[in-house]
Length: 157
Length: 104
Image (cartoon, rainbow over all chains, first blue to last red; front, side, top):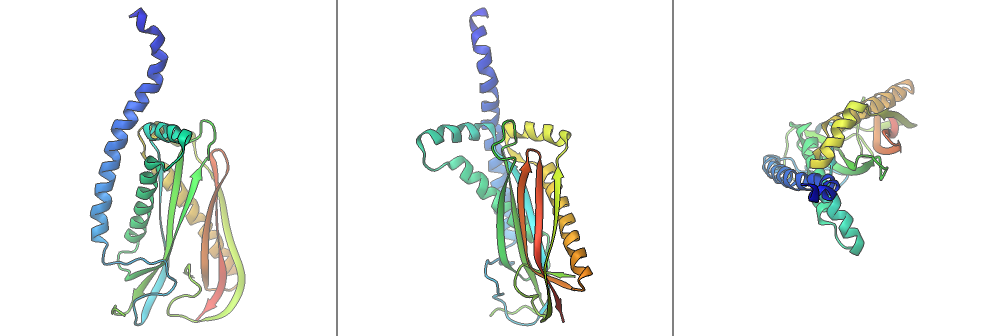
């Protein structure tokens, strides 16, 4: 037992790494499953970044809508990104995190206006929360906002 | 009050423009949320407390912007933009701005 004593400080580093890997992967898979399912149910509500609606006809009303999510990166991904920054190149672990966050924000935006016929001028904003601060939270907020259009009687252009 | 982030209010015409209106809030998170977020930081995932906090602040900023527009006699705000910046560790500013107009 005493022979292993010098390795105890290492555990402080290894335990969160293993926890982060196991739960992080599990959470990511579950989140992607939920995103795929919900995206399918929202296919009838198109969202564009263009400023004018694709649908033609009389517009009943419009409103400003938004959806946001704050996500945090897990310990394993942060360590992987740290290693990656030594040699440079794409940081895959962060790419999937931000991809999930953006899609989740857009889905929440759509869920906030179920009766709309089209979403125009979709904008996405990413803001780091407490950037790089020592002891700070490595988290980003993704906020999606757009104008939802409600038609009198929807017809395709 | 009509709001949109495009140059017009779809289906309406702008009859008068009143200039830029804006609203902002600076919010700090509380310690309890921070401890939970610290734990979440190991396993990753959504920080629901933060999502709520930022949504509340954004709503408040929008309310302030609307109040300003109302004072000017406007009934709509077009070209609404949002910006978020962390001004200090543990505090974020939410700023929302747009052009106050009268539509008919």
